[in-house]
Image 1: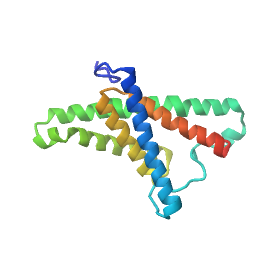
Image 2: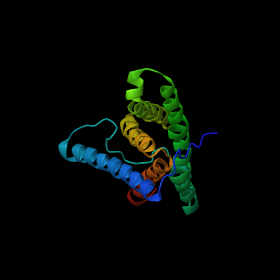
Image 3: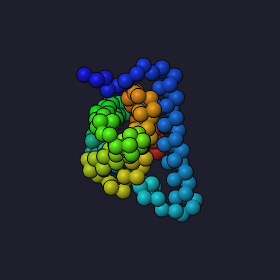
Image 4: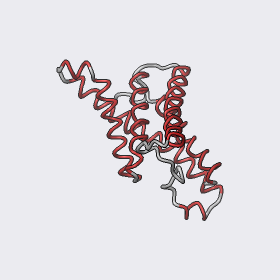
Length: 183
């Protein structure tokens, strides 16, 4: 069976560079979108200001709660979800798409295979994410996240940078949710 985590050895420093680079790019794009919305009055679909960052977390679960419930929710969102999503989308789906395109003899497909795979994987990821968690209005930022995660997976030939990038992004959500909205 093919190793979906890494097709080649990758150095820890390279994992860190790609993960942080992807994270900074994504957060930078979010910052730019936020500034355009707040100060420019520009509406950017999917980047509108929301009351809560994690609206899918049921308030009743949180109110029952305790730090234990918040800890469980944070653990799932920060570690479990990124691991599962990256294995499914960048590990299995993206690998399958790449192998399928490599098997085709079209010169066009061979020339643009990375771009086709990145866009296809990001599109499927965004559509399934909004279908499962609701909120079609969030599709653009989710698609952009998928583009970055797919690109760093192809560049590194490893899932590790995408997993860490995803963990960093979700950890940011949790931290913002806790401090701004008191989860």
